[in-house]
Length: 251
Image 1 (cartoon, rainbow, N blue to C red):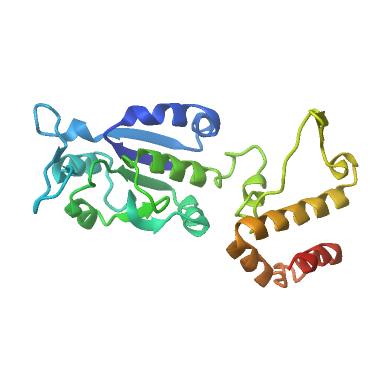
Image 2: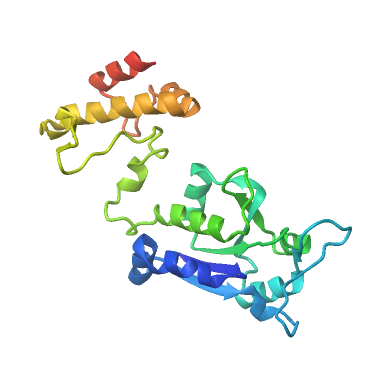
């Protein structure tokens, strides 16, 4: 997947795109992340990229011309262009899956009070938000979007199934996790996890996930319960009798 990021602060992305999972994906050639500094396309001698809004109001607005220059530089016409904006659609599982199926993206990071509306209209931009709150700029939301989408690309994670088994994607919040040592400051790992009985371990994980989801995200729990009788593509039931007993107990 090729991703072009248009931003006033390209240096913010280096630690994220160079290291960890995304860095490895870039090294493998799975991701091609390119940073474009919008200021480079300003016609002002001071590389100014913002000005006061027409009609008054506080703050500054990013001007159309530098952004148009950056868009033309990355050949954004005909590509999927996203603007990270608090007024956009909330980034959720469905949107992440949709974006992960695309070959390339252009992500515009706003700043100040936003960007000139003509940018959004001309380039057919989709606005996406990561939550109902306001951040200083679109750089952090862009990082969230890239990270969440990249996890679904084949080869990015060590375990191909891990992304789909994780919290939210599985329909439930994740069960508690433990590692060495087995006892720490009087707190012990649940005995079932060291029993070697994989069937009981799986049932324990399901029950704990159900409990946590019901307590913390009731809407996810209800959605999960409403689909417990769904069948897999091969016609088999989604849950075993033992799993169904646990689900029925916690309804």
